[in-house]
Image (cartoon, rainbow over all chains, first blue to last red; front, side, top):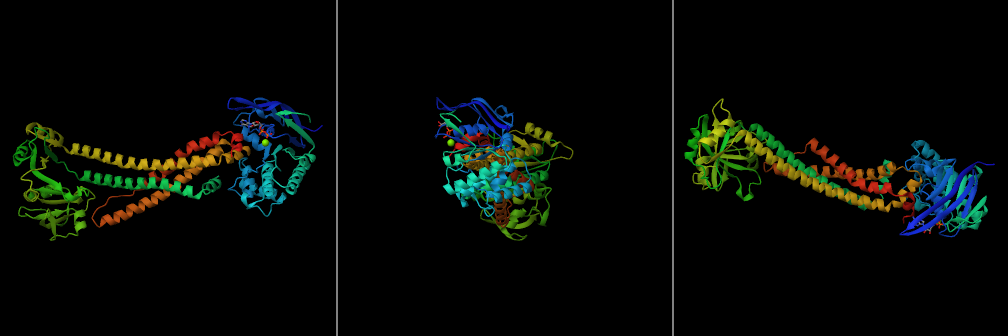
Length: 225
Length: 371
Ligand SMILES: Nc1ncnc2c1ncn2[C@@H]1O[C@H](COP(=O)(O)OP(=O)(O)O)[C@@H](O)[C@H]1O
Ligand SMILES: [Mg+2]
């Protein structure tokens, strides 16, 4: 049996909207194996992004635990959190979230900066990753000079730059056409072939088809797997 | 990091330029005011080093005061320990300018002119002598401003005076004196025998401080200012001058700092999402603070350099122009430039602290959901 890289145990997150508590995630438990490509599906507002933020250590759960590679990341101190995010997580967002002032190369290289990698090595690796994702001709373009698909590929390159344990992609194909979508899904599949664990939030059954497993969420709770 | 800081600062060019101008203006004020204060301080120090051991005797002010007369001069002269005492009449050189130029006319007994001016030497000509009625000895600034040489004519209160001597340059108040005979001064300025103060030369070996006390006790209706008291008074006015000039300049610089704070708050608010991205990528709080503070410091530093360049240029131009009038008003010193530069960076960073703190304490997810 493959190693369980992610364990989510009885996870809950309650937001306060003014005085009204919103249970965005409720008692969620599941595990993900090393090298799995997982789809999370569910209606809008069902808590998918919240779940990703919790796994990515961008938010703290109200209740429950998350273990990544057997490290209980929900128990890690605030000071240590940035290191966990750098080393274990790679984010891909729906809106790409590239820094507008930096080139494609700059955006990818930036991710490695916080990891303390030296500049020469950063640039080498960033260039290599972008070339692998078919952006060799676009290294010095700024995000506003790139198409949506190209921007998403830059953000994938950025996400994998630090060799994270898990890639979390929140609706990565939400804003691109079907051709571009297929290209992006292909990239994820290829990464998976190299043993990369990936969780994709999506509304698109075409994307889900390519995944090993679909986790369905509704009103913050998992329906059935 | 510096490349990122520069990229951020150049994102909003107009705003960045305006902010830099705000700081530059403040530092400009600091340099100009500081240069004035430095000049004042140096003139003061030179004047102090030239102030001899003489005691000045003034009429007591208030209802008991009755002005000074030749009678008082002779009373003072008879106090034990006084070697010599004589009256001096002082008035503004150019009353229409309210003394802004700092130039003064000194009426002194002609034969005492050397003693009054001690230890300043002549550059040309001679001191006043008993026969001089409309003779004048001028300081270097006045000579420079009016292009005077010995034998030229200088008009004082519509009366023509012949220049008999020109003092050497001292960088002190002596450069701004025109010295004429006391009698003539009293006549020309319609002062009917009034005396501004009495100059007392203590006898050799007599302590000036003690002698000053003794004069106050033995002559009715007078106050004295001993050499030490004069120094104290002058130091005090120097201090007040410095405090007023420097603090108004610092105020200007602080207003420049507020413009940095405003810009940084705006830029932090606009880039909220960016900070969320950086945090999602694993940036530490110190990275965020470095970025924000670094940008503020950069704005401060550029503003500082600009303020120093414009301030130095302005004082240079003003000095060149004033030199034709025989005046020096500004001195740019190394320490002034260093202080101005450090202050610019300091102001930038202090103003950046709060925005940096705001950026750092944002929760990453909140920041990402933003806009
Ligand atoms: N910061 C927040 N404060 C309050 N409520 C929030 C916050 N973030 C999310 N929510 C609420 O939590 C629920 C789940 O949101 P989200 O995880 O974004 O859903 P999804 O990504 O599935 O559309 C929604 O009802 C949303 O309004
Ligand atoms: Mg969502």
